[in-house]
Image 1 (spheres, one colour):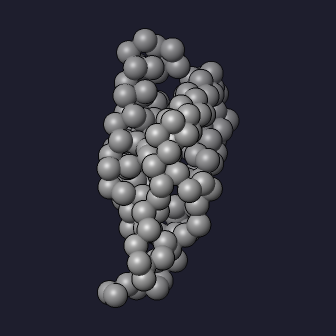
Image 2 (cartoon, rainbow, N blue to C red):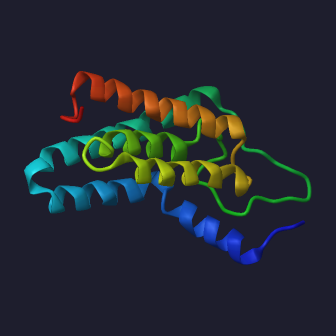
Length: 154
């Protein structure tokens, strides 16, 4: 009830670009090509985004929380797995925003990360706590990496 089909399709299409952090890897690759002086930093940041996806997946398999199932209200998109906690979209998006945000203005990156996070409960594939946990995990990973200088981003 109260759904707008075009909005549902748009949110689902946008959210699909975040599967397996694909959009963030593409963004890091473009950054590495366009910003030759900091190519190594872009590539290291992209590698940390990949690591955040792996960490998120390990936590998902340890926690094994099933995705939400609401009677009469099916999810608006398909998912890679039946596991929900934490949201990989939120984890990788906030990791990317935190690390790429050391190389270019961070505000637009955090806006996109927030949209990815909000899209998941909207689509009916995550509980709000899944995306909050993912955002905290991704932010903590980015902060930890930046504080150590591992990715060359401070």
